[in-house]
Amino acid sequence: MIASTNLDAREMEAIAARHPHLLQSSAAKRRSTALITAGVVLYMIFSWWFFSIGHVLANANWGIAGTYLADWVSYEVRPEIAVAPDGTMSVSFGRNSPLGDDPSPEWVTLEKETVTRTVAAPAAAAQVQKPKTASSFSFMAPNAARGADTNSTPQEDAATTRTEEVVTHAVVKFDSSTRIDVAEKLVTVTHSGETLVLQVDGADNVTPEGPLPSWAIQKRPGEKVTLSFGATGWAEVEGDEVSIRNRFFGWVNFLFDTNSPFFGKPYSEVASLIVSGERIDPARSNLSLAWNNTLYNAEWQHLDVWTKLLQTIVMAFVGTLFASFIAFPLCFLAARNITPSRLTNQFVKRFFDFLRSVDMFIWALFFTRAFGPGPLAGISAIFFTDTGTLGKLYSEALENIDDKQREGVKSVGAAPVAVQRFGVLPQVLPVFASQALYFWESNTRSATIIGAVGAGGIGLKLWEAMRTNSDWENVAYMVLLILMVVFVFDSISNLCRSRLIGRTH
Image (tube, rainbow, N blue to C red; front, top):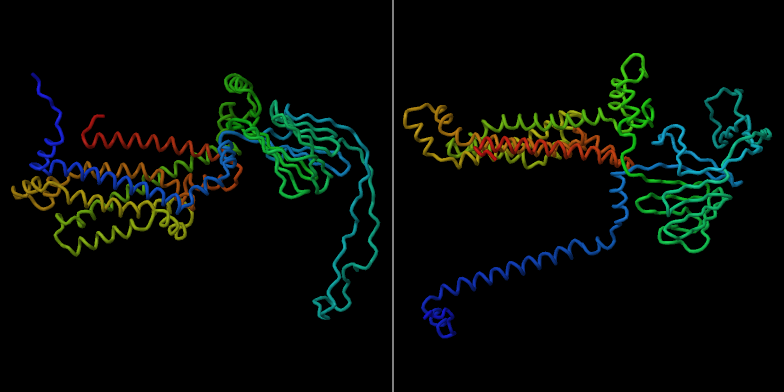
């Protein structure tokens, strides 16, 4: 017969009386777990209140964040429709349009007419301000000729008659559900099944006909109206101009800019020209020309970006290398079990504290001021910060070594240098190298940040692109390059550290 394993209350009380520590420990654990949980919950509630997280989330403009993210992977074409007081229009795409010098996209439809109009020419003679009469002093000779008197009668304005071609009707199609129609001082906007009609006067005022839909904003009567169409783009309607921002997915002109002879050609045609086509430039092959146009692409600046990225890599490598070389001998002076002098230990340790207590970003500002913008400032900032950090880590590794190996070398009568060489270095050298490799990989990221303050490298280039607030696709390109470099160097660093500590995986 199998005995029952269930205990009744009387038996539990007896066990508790004989062995009170068995139940007390479990109760203490439950109380500590409950207290820790309550503390974490209270801290989260306090943080939510102290930092006003709910208010921040409620008032955050998530639409702007979405627009910024869309700008990373898209580009905008920006036609401007200028409206004259007589209702005629002119369309321009800007000097640096991604469509080239003479764009004619399919999604813009224009109706044009030839008109004859009379234009008033400016007066031939400019009016000169009459000198002040409050003072009789003048640097001019007593009877010198002065500018024309402002009280004199200006010349009659000349009038010229000219014939020109103007736009009378413009239609911009964003997608199947969004379009803007401009004609006769009326801007008709259709989006998501809703229609908005705006009257413009060719000068300053915009007047909506009816209430504004949710995707249209006008801060004050008569001012411009901003139209938001989501991922497809946006527009602004003013009294004398309609500004279009039509967004397209992708990175435009990534290989060839608008000045390249390969611009606008299909990739198959470009490949054919490179392989077997006649030379576009008699002085070089088409392959050399295409490579040159890609490197010196004015919109993406590939060569400059790659050069700055290489500077960042060199900054991280040289700064970490110099820091390792300086921290290596100093760490033996800071380790208490290696150098018995307490004064020397404390002096070197405080020196390490000084170097690493000042952030790398602050050192970068200091050296940029001292040496001027460039990689030297970045290398110096990394060198100073890492010397302090690596020196502290190295000295702690020395203080944690096994003294038996060092005593064994010392027992055979070895010199002090030989004791350190054969009794200490074999224990700490893999650790030293592993930490140096980690800092090299970490400094590749840090060099990007300090580059933004003028310390050279791709960080400065990245900051310049972000400040324009319009070149976010260039920002995405550089961020992607930085990520690739960090991934590569992280893999190399992990592989080297695994080999150093004896692991094969």
